[in-house]
Image 1 (tube, rainbow, N blue to C red):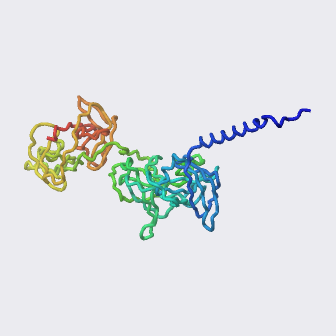
Image 2 (cartoon, rainbow, N blue to C red; image 1 turned 90 degrees about the vertical axis):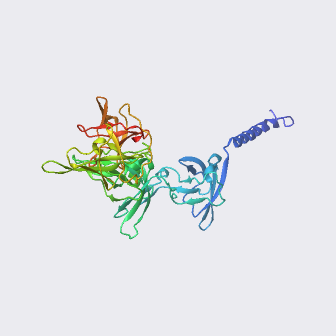
Length: 455
């Protein structure tokens, strides 16, 4: 019978595995990503458990290590946050519990329906140092930070309906804004929703815009007796949203404009295909705004009728620039008198020097409305994306609206009730003036080149 040797070096066979295990543990500890330990105290545990993730902008950046009851209304959570995400722990940072919840305002937290509840980290000030004990655990997401840019309008509704803060604002199903605040009006007769439209899409809202509520799934009976289900977006289906459309002939609105919130859209609104300016199309801050002008005269014929021609003139340092057809005395005017009305002031038109299609006259108000030098101009070489300025109304036109006749560019413009004569045309990409529109010819307006220096 073999007997183990207890006097030799057999103990080395036991030592080697222990050394290997210790080295492995040391390597694992060394390879572990550095973390920042944070302790917070919440009023309750919210069903959170050790191992539950902590997410920042949808990415897991840590986990809950320990949940301990310290006393009535006090639950201590020990957290570990990846060091690379520690920048988010500055002053103002907060944690909120993500869990499924249903309320009259909507549904949220569905991502926690098939998994554990978790904490979402809302980043604080970057570069700051978090104050110990200042990190809070909230039962619901904190209010979104104020965004100073964009267009803010107010929607007035008879009741809250499905309105809720942070709901999307949709244009043709695309998110272009957000509901920032919902509250009772000061006299408690209505509910007011403050809406912010992103700056890039502010031009989509005009005084002809119509807003309505998108309350989840919309059911409509079809002609075949079936049911059609339309979902503007998944977010709108679960949380509700506000949609809007803009009709033709509108003018831009400013912050503070108010609209009625309708229960649903009129079929006519859904059929609107109004071309609008959106996105960073052009910086028009330095482009002068055309002014409405009326040429008035009395026809010296048998009936002596009062006549009028409307168009636009552009303020320039030398005065008012416009098409010669608008600024010249009318042929056949009684006593040779033709008046031009601009900004409520009338002046007599006299013979114009030169023969160009564009002329400049003295401003009857002496330039009181301003006439600072605008940007330079350029001549188009081919049809392009452009903007037609009808006063403060901006009408986009694409290359398909252009045509060429005997070397002359012509543009088809659907101006509606506004005149198009004299409207300023600028390039959409560089906001440089390309010319002004002349008298209509077969539904198209010739693009008149601008004289150098506005002279």
